[in-house]
Image (cartoon, rainbow, N blue to C red; front, side, top):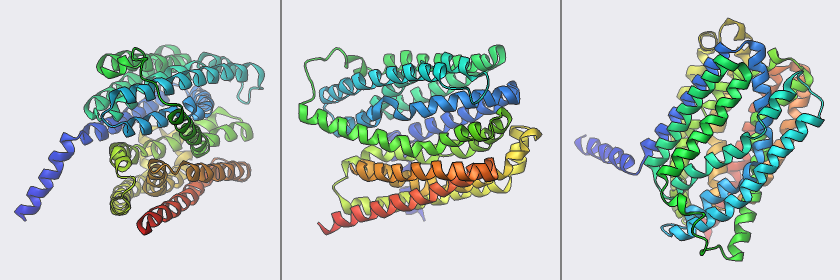
Length: 430
């Protein structure tokens, strides 16, 4: 017994020394702050204004699916592969950021054109879309610095910066909502990301050298590998993340009321936010899996451990939220949102499936450079998701959207893990 206790203590100390608790803690704080901001914004704004805000942000998020043309993930992958070579890492980030900044500037321009030229599915949304058009560019700059810190294994700094961003987002969004309604919440997102960029640039010492160190550039062959990896990842992300955004867009078209959007957004907030648990753990283990990508025995053993731990942890959480859904909705959002309980329960089941199987499976495939497989699975599931949404929302309303999302979670989870199993099995034979 004493041996087991001592061994457990050693594991906890080792996790603390490698920054696990800073990464996981930052992810936890981020989602708690995000959830709190959603809860408080719901309480501050009217249901109509909250529906308008949710609709506008959802459209921004749809355009942001191609965020930086996948260069954030590309910089994480190739930055980790650079190991202790700071000059190589800086060359990766300098090249990636050049592509990403231009790409997101184009996204901002497209949002402006969309707002001006496309018909308003939700009356009055055009003015808010124009105001929010620059969010993709500011957001990209705010994403690059934590990514750089992660590639350096600066988990403590990463955690602190991530936490700062979460707290800033909560404070500025709430202050904006209180004083300026929908405009204020959107302005709060701008300010929080700017604060992250300023503070991040101050604490990430090597990051500041990226633009200065122009002598070291990536060879042409590595540039091609980086672009190929990033673009495939981008396509993968576009279709996989449609699950989180297309529902609200289709509800806006088919049902066309801010109240229905507000109820569905309330149902999605907690299930989608809970995904941080798996994401935070995978963020911590990402460098380890990348460094052992050629060791199939290690991958098989540790992937099983990862999925088992996630299954138990996410299962306990899902059961709690499923059972107490009506009480949770009433306390957090108020009695007027009780019409979202059924959607909430369906999405909680989807959360368990996705967080336990879909998220780790897809991420480990990416770590193993199996981005084409990820892309094909995501394209197929994205198309299916759109078809399911259109058919089910027309017949069942918001409940149909929840069923469509959960169904796609199940399909992609099976596909990701079947492909991953075959990749690892092929490696064991070789």
